[in-house]
Length: 284
Image 1 (cartoon, rainbow, N blue to C red):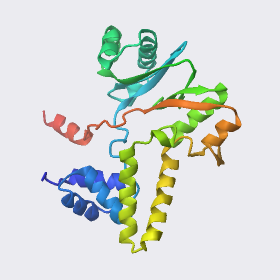
Image 2: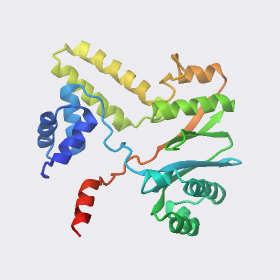
Image 3: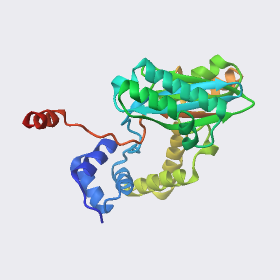
């Protein structure tokens, strides 16, 4: 059993929104396993799934390039938000995306090697380390479009679609806002569905409901869960009275697949105590 630290308790509290003591007890019961502790809390409290690995914790930008039937979405990281806003850094990110679309590298290492000289040059100019964190290529006979949200360019999506581009672009904006995991129910991982079913079943049992009622409750919650995580099942942000699937059908369009990124997802950001640094520097 790993030691239960204050940081582990705080992280679990941030992910679930539950009390510190509840989180500590769950961690003890789970013997320090964060994911298991989160599952315990969900069973006992009905809390929604947290996103321990989904917090934005690094600086940088997203960029995309579409060259013919090839589309690319990339994430390029730096150390500070100040540099992330620099025109030179943004230009470098756009160049990385263009290179990926033209050269179609198979791995991150290959792409990084292709842009290494550019990377060194921009580091020398801006005085900050930076790296290409990830990228994804879509090569298709269908259409491609992309949407990067806001001036900071920290959230975005690359969409493969059939139909009109303006329709696909609106759905791309929806994807950034609503964060679906995939397009349709058939793409949801079976283990994920089973985990949700297990949690809902245990919650129903502990609530004391009769078996037949509990079964109906579980199936209803599974249906709701699938609607929440799939693009086609979600309520369309621009018209919540219809689903995305209905909006697409109404406009003779289809989303085949998408890649959605948010800068820093899953990266643990080092917390800097500037007051302590200043105090330490004053003693030198």
